[in-house]
Amino acid sequence: MFAEQELQAEHTAQSIPTVKPELRVGFVLMNQFTLVPVAGLVDSLRFAADKSFRSQQLYCQWDWMTLDDQPITASCGMPISPTKPLNLRGQYDYIVLAGGLLEQTRNPPDWLLDALRDLHAANIPIIALCSGSFVLGKAGLLDGRRCALHFTLRDEFKERFPQSTAVIDKSYVDDHGIITCPGGTAIDLAANLIRRHCGAVRAQKGLEYLLVEERADEQQDKAASDSVYQNDRVQRAISFMRANLDASVSLKALAEAVGTHPRQLHREFVTNTQDPPANYWRKLRLDHARRLLVNTSQNITTIALACGFSDASHFILWFRKQYGETPYSFRKRRHEVERFDWHGDKVGLDPEL
Image 1 (cartoon, helix red, strand yellow):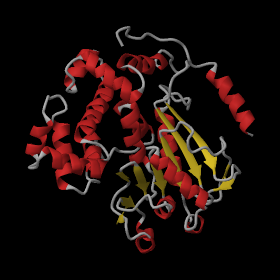
Image 2 (image 1 turned 45 degrees about the vertical axis):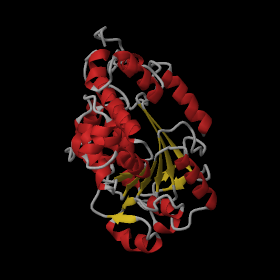
Image 3 (image 1 turned 30 degrees about the vertical axis):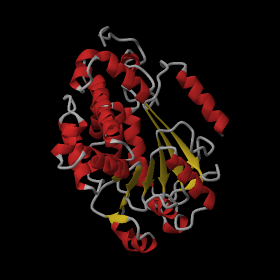
Image 4 (image 1 turned 120 degrees about the horizontal axis):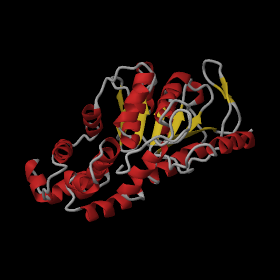
């Protein structure tokens, strides 16, 4: 089964340019998983994955896995076969744990709990769909965190995992690399992930072709992400950082702006975000720079200055450390795919891009 799928993928790859994917997702489907959120998430990825609509896995790639490498059945009765053997450390940007009927997620195997703990320790974000949150709760990964739940699951979840804060009014919650989604279509979550990794244009493409009206713009997504930090000073500091991405502001000035001392702010940041303030601020600047590289034609120096870096060399150095490539190569490989139109024929491309 796996061999046939890999041969087909190899044949398809021969007709398209080689591109390093910007978003790689490993789906781990538990038996009796809920189909709708999985379908909404992967179909959003599908529309963002290439320039046209041939469902080629270029910008985004995904695999289907199961706990025993055997076919399973969704809660609606649809059978599905894995495309890859289970490998939670397979170079994925996210692992999606898709749950459904509670009898399948209340008592997960110990080896899975250990594997999820190791995954989180390696700083690989985990997404729990539907009752997948019960598995993360059993692994202790939701202690002290907020968790987005379906309202029908709240009471049992609160009883089982009192150290977690159950939230029933959010389409998803991202709390320190643990992302929980109560179900639904999961399209809001998918749009935010795509916007973060592939740019606003591709996120909007999926929303339009799935006939979904965008309910939260980029700033609202950022505010929702910031709100997971329960320390008020940290939240206000992050808001200050976002408002001053292009400015050269000292950490002392940042601490004064939120009414504290640099050492105290440092301790609170590490406790809440696992990053010192300087590192967190730099990640915000680099994330903003990546969006500018994707969505504008501004040159590297202009982007560097707009994101608070002293010069292009400083910006290139940190961009390479964060993303493993230079800003130029990041932008160039994105546009290599855009040389190919719907039929795979080469089309014109601005050489300055």
